[in-house]
Structures are given as C-alpha cells and as structure tokens.
Picture 1 (cartoon, one colour):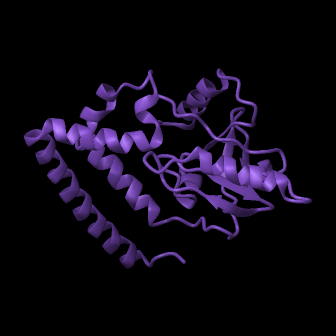
Picture 2 (picture 1 turned 90 degrees about the vertical axis):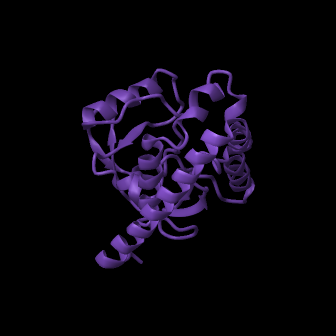
Picture 3 (picture 1 turned 180 degrees about the vertical axis):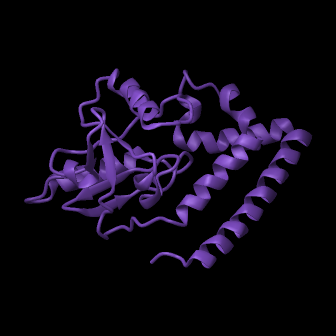
Length: 209
C-alpha cells in the first residue's frame, strides 16, 4: 500500500539526510585513507563480478564514488524504492513500455513470448523517448534473442518495479515468482538461472519471463 503524500515526503527527507551523511563520511574516508577505501569498494565489487570484467576497470568507477553525481543517483534510487509495488508472489504491475518502433504496449504482453534482461550500456541521461529508443538500439546490435522494449519517459515501470539501477524479475502467469535484490551489489543472475531451471523442471510449468 502506498504512502500518503505527507508520509512520502517525510520518508524522502529522512532518506536525503541519511544519504548526505553516508556520502560525506565516505568522502572524508576516501580522502584520508584512499587505499583502504578502494579496498572496501573493490570488495563490494567482487560480489557482483564487476572486478572481473576486463572492459570495466576499477579505475573507471572507484573514483566516482561519493561524488556529487553519486549522491544524486543514490538518492534517486532510494527515493524510488519508496514507490515499489512489485512483491514476490503478488500480481505483477502491468506497466506501459514502448517497443523500438514507438508503439506502446504493456509488460504482460511479453509474458507468453518470453522475457529477458538488458545488459548495462554506457549511455547518457535520456532527455526524450527518442533518446531512449536510440540507446535501446545499442542493445539490438548485440543480437539479443528476446523482445526489447523501453520504459516510458514517466518511468512507470522503473518506479513500480523499483528497478533503478537494475533489478531482475521472473514473471509467470502475471505474478512475480522471483524478485531480485537491487543492483549493482546484490545483482545475482545465478539466482535467476536457478529459478528458471526449477520452473523448467516443474511438471506442467514453463517459465514465462
């Protein structure tokens, strides 16, 4: 159940103060003890395999921690989680998405065809739906074996599924049978694989993503 308008803004204020303190402390720690801070960040990165990606050097992302941009991004993510409407076992939000042709459709339209997950892409902030569609074509260049759609500019899907910056779900018959933890630190494709394998072996059930 959603929060009241006043309750939502009070929650947002509390989160704002919490993130501000965390970033300030992190910035001071990184300034005074840069080597120790880097070790801590890399330890978190190892949990998600970020440190094993040869195209994603730690020198490209470790220094960005605790910056102003980092602060606003983390704040946006935590604020968005207040509007999370996707619950394990519950009805999956049938939010609007957009095909690359520009045609609007809904998440449930893909349940029968099979759903898949996007790879991270190095793209700029979208200013329009055209920007978002253009970015999605970068994914198409990798020949994914699945339908590709994008969220609307109102970010309805991202809000209802608390999907920022990334989150994995498995939907079956309109219900959520797997809800992953928020990325990047708790992003776990192996859990998804295990869920899909279990669904594939269940009598009379096929996974519908």
